[in-house]
Amino acid sequence: MKAIDFTADWRKKLVDRFITYVKIFSTSDPESDTTPSTPQQWDMAKYLFNELQELGLEDVSMDEHGYVFGFIPSNIEEKVAHVGFIAHYDSTPDFNGVDVKPQIWENYDGGDLLLNKETGFVLSSEKFTDLKKYIGQTIITTDGTTLLSADDKAGIAEIVTAAEYLLAHPEIKHGRISVGFNPDEEIGRGAHKFNVEKFGAEWAYTMDGGEIGELEYENFNAAGAVIKITGVSVHPGYSFGKMLNAGLVASEFIQSLPANETPATTKGFDGFFHLTDFTGDVAEAKLQYIIRDHDDAKFEARKQLMADKVAEINAKYGANTATLEIKPQYLNMKKQFEGKMHIIDIAEQAMKDAGVEPKIKAIRGGTDGAQLSYMGLPCPNIFAGGHYFHGPYEFVPIENMEAATCVIINIAQSIK
Image (cartoon, rainbow, N blue to C red; front, side):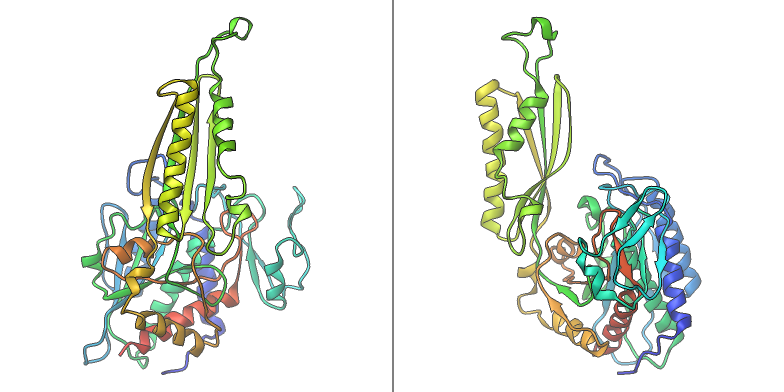
C-alpha cells in the first residue's frame, strides 16, 4: 500500500472545501413532498456537479432529483471490486442552517470557547467533554447562531478531496470508484430515489459517522409519526361542558408515553420516542415524533403503543379526536452484512493503516446506508469526524477530517 503524503497544501484544500460547503444553505424540509425537499439544496447539488467535472471525474451527472454521481477511473488492468463513497448534502431542519459562519480555532487549549462575543454563547469544555480529546489540534466551530453542517459536509469534503488526491497520484493503484451525493438524508428520504444500478458499485461506504474511528454496520429501525388532534373551540366564558382544548389533549398524549424512553434518557441499544415538533391551539394540535429501536420486535411494539395511546384518546374524547400516521424511514442494516463481513474488514484495516483506532459500534441514528443496504448496495458507515451535530455546539477537528480522507484513499487502494 502506498503511503499518503497529506501535505499542508492538501490540508488547505480540504479545509477550504469544507468552509465553502457549509456556507451554502441547504436545509431539508420534512413537510415537503418534492425531491429535493427544498429549493436551496439545488445550490449545493449544482456546486458539487460543477466541482466534480472540474476535477476530472468521469461520467459526472446530476439527475432531476438532485443526485450527483461521478466516477474515478480505474488505473489498473485487472478486474477488481467496484466500490463507492456516499455523503448527503442537506442540513437538518432541527436548527438554523442559514448564514453559517464557521470559526477556526488553532492549537485548542482545552478550555471553553467563546463562540459569540455579542451573545455570550460559549462552547463549554465541561459540558461538552469530547472537546478535551482535541487539545493541541485545530477545531472548526459555529458562531453560536447556527449549526455547522459538518453532518454531512465534512463527509463530502473528505470524499471530494480523496478523489482529487487519487486523480493527482496515479502511482496509487485502484479500480473504478463511484462517488455519490444526495439530498434529504436528514428527513429520512436520502436514498429513496438513489439509482443503485447507475451508481454501479458492488458495495459502498457512507462517510456520515461522528467521531474519529467510528465504523458502523447496524443502526436503528426508524419511523416517523404524526398525531393530529381536533378540539372544540368555544368562547371560554360559555365553554363549560363544551370546549375540548386540543393543546391540552396533545399534552396528555405526550405524558402517556414512557417518560424514561426519550433520547435524553437512553443510550446504547435502548430505543426511544422523540417529540420533534409540537404546534397547537384550542381548535387543533399537531405532534411529530420519530420512533427508534435496534430490535425489530421492540420497534413494532413501539409503533403499536403509539397506536394504542391514540385509541385511548379517542375512547375518552370521542371518535376521530386524534389521528395517527406512521411512515417507515429505514431498517436496521445489520442483517444485510451476513456473509459480507469482508466489507467491514477492509474499512477496519484501512483505518489501522491510517493510524486510526477502529471503534465498531451500532449507530444511535440512521444513515442512507441503511436504506441502500436493503436496495442491494451494502453500505456501512464511516466516521466523518464531527461532534454534537444538529445544533450550535457542533464542531469538527481538522485532524479528524484528514484521517477520514486518508481512510477513503486506503480503502480505494486496498481493493483487490
